[in-house]
Length: 86
Image (cartoon, rainbow, N blue to C red):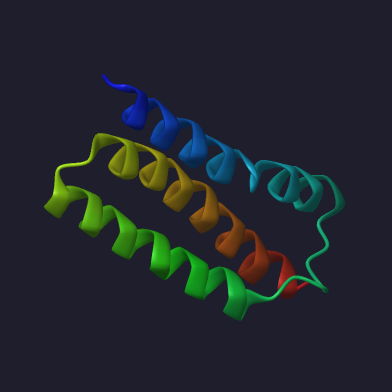
């Protein structure tokens, strides 16, 4: 692993963990009134495309960090849909 891969993993990790505080807040409060489903849906789709791009480029940093991001964003989308009903 070279320094470019390390920078890519670090950047991807920062982006990936940025969703965790929002997920935790929604999980505790059960409130999603001010969170845009459209925004998170577009973001989630974009992350899925990044995974495809990473696979095509055979770039492990892109694949791994965006795969984790995809899972976290899918959780957020689920929370928005689930708690919006309440």
